[in-house]
Image 1 (tube, rainbow, N blue to C red):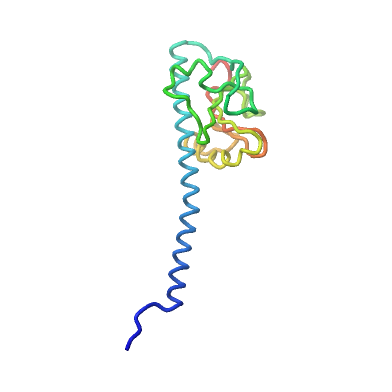
Image 2 (cartoon, rainbow, N blue to C red):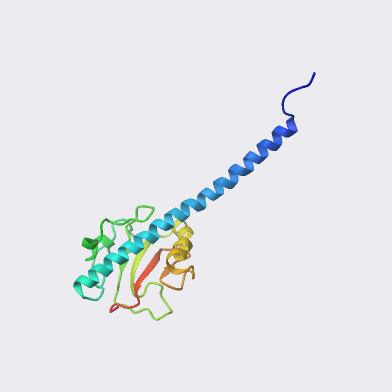
Length: 180
């Protein structure tokens, strides 16, 4: 009479293989979520940039300096959210990042000269307050890859702060100075 079934060794091998496949898929899922979030931010940046282009064509004016106001979703900065600017009528929505934070507008009238502050010039920024930066920093390279060829945190049109413990943001540069 022949026994039908699996040996303990066979069962352990199958369980081990299933466990390894499950852990690989869980690790891959995190990257997929980060890429999806980055895709949303990249698309939002492009839509907001398009809104500014439409506004500039209609008004024939330089980018305005930022107005007094605060982004209601981010208390650690004193910049207006995009929906508090003249561009809002040219946008189809109030844009928010993946963690429901509105994008900010930054134009202090300063000129970016290739060094110094990442924020000089005219920018759309997805902000974070001290201690909340890790999730944003995880998606920043994917946004950079999508919009700017992946040239790093301090080059090109997409820039970001790399210290999650400090106030920071992911910056999309619209222009290098206030008259552009």
